[in-house]
Length: 226
Image (cartoon, rainbow, N blue to C red; front, side, top):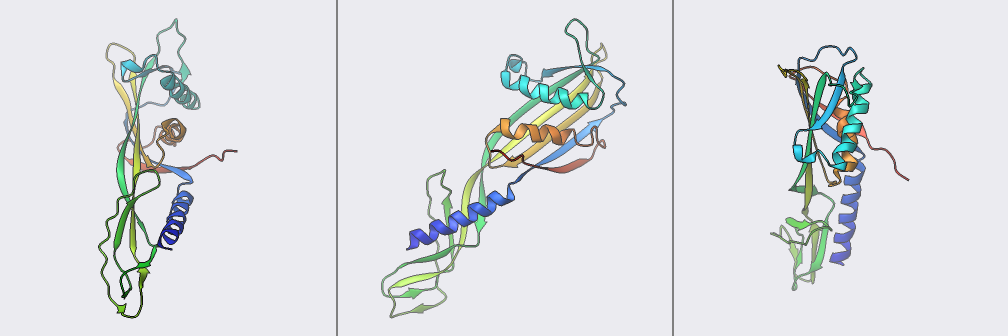
């Protein structure tokens, strides 16, 4: 009985989390002295030179190039020197996160006493091993019963992923003056950077180039998939 109730409460909690994750929220910061575009040509390169031959990088670079084109910039012809150099860098790291589940109701047998349990139970979600940590305490009991039950505070410890995108724009001349520095951070339960990156790119180009020195929180609805 206890396992069934716990499973149902976990399913309900995960469903609520899924409902809240229908969009990608990004935190964008930028500093720039970028003049109004006048048809300058751009070349997009990786900040990490080892990514020069990366297929993944080329996909993201094409996305950024399309967004820059909406603001009047043009891709440089290979035989010509670009006016501006656009540097891109990206990455992802994971950390553990604790989520509070207020919908758990615990039931079970405990000797000959009926316990109303108020406590905290820690466990990993379905993707990770269970780790029980249950400091129960009993505000009331009934001596003629053979089970305990009551509401508990449940904390689900899951994995959260921090995603980041960096974009710099520099003049392509001897002075190499930096014109734009932008950074996008996004946090969520998806480790698929290729799935989230299009939304992070849209976020950094939302109101581009933006107000220098100010951060902005941008949420973009996820596209529905068949």
